[in-house]
Length: 599
Image (cartoon, rainbow, N blue to C red; front, side, top):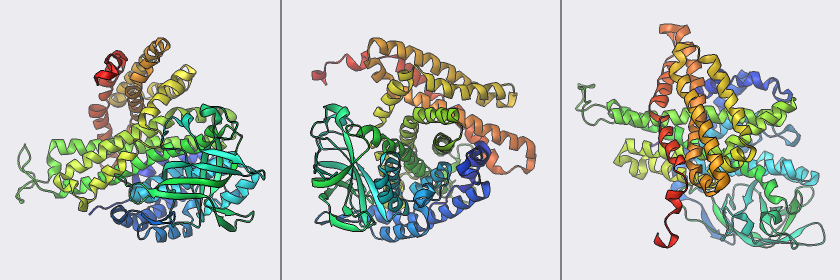
């Protein structure tokens, strides 16, 4: 049976020692009083909620799944409603929302840590508040004052939940083919008809109302993505005071029978004359929805980070307890009939790979959350702009690189268990199944790769990438003079130079043939992912090394383990970039030479 302990110590290390987040947040008036003590209190109490309330429902929720009970109604697994009630009563939905609408106004940096713990404990359950927060973000940015007054306080409190309805049976990535129609009713509302599929949290019994954000076309809309508008379509139409009125014309037709995340209701939603209200400007709905989509992409990265952590924890426990064979260098537990499998080199490879990708992703993600705090509320416009650019550049990386690693590492966790990992009772196979969707939804990882190379890097001639490169250059200049940091700084600096050359080469090729960018994009994103991870592992190593040197024999073993993991990352994982760069340079020819008829 799986277990979970919130990694509060490592979270504190990243937030306080590596990023010194509260010091940076002190320069933002809205967060000036968010000190270390408050952050630690949220981590501790949030961890208890996730471990004690959500985690016990993970395996049972997966086995029971959501049930379609007819007439558009869906029941969530046993215990989910009670967990939602506890979630609301604890004030957890309000954590990072603005006080204007009933939120606590805490920084995204804190919210990211709580989000990670929810996903470790129960990814399927965590999707309900995750999508609700995305709807909150979208309406906060683009809703009318009336819409904000009506919907935001109820989304913040958890009284109502939210979804986003984009995908249709014939279009997922290519939303330009969207067919749902919105006809004006003459009273400011619209009558919306169409079918949406794969709608996470589309119908359930957790909350009194569900606020759907729906993409549809107005009668005179131009073709393609430039003709898409966004509408708010509630399950029950409320009056101006929030009292629920009649059931709207949006209903669940069925729930998907999926590979994983069984505890979340993934629905086909049928709209037949559903009343909706325009959000933002006509025909500009896709750009408005991107507020929610970008938040969701970071959230999906957090889903995989959560799964990586809990899968790693369990595989370590198993490797310490499971005895099989003797160490190649002689018995390590002579009093037992065999040694624990943690003595075997390849088991250690699997464990350290999990640990390196998990802790590296945590450091990256929390830094990205800090950029979101700066971009949203820093008093300095230049600081806000710089943070926004970094957030824009690296959102596809946190989505794709972290979720690719999430599937890799949950597979490794299962492999550590061997045959026991493949059967349900130990819980590892669920983490593999749940992790697989994260590479697909909210824009497949290939789409993220194309977005990174084509739009975020080549689209501005590398300006955003150079800004991130400047952070690396500064760090290399400061730490490169220290011999003891060479093993971390030198491979970081070397990879930075190779990325610069590769980016210029791919940009030149793409100018002559756009397929060159498409052929190299997936390899390129993974190289950038390693550049990011190298930077953050070097920073973590710098902090840990300083403590080891200062404290000597009295040093906390935590820092010794951090240094060992950093050395493993640079020795065994970062060298993957050499093959990736070579593959990216082969170009489009090996992919496009074969005629489609010959496949």
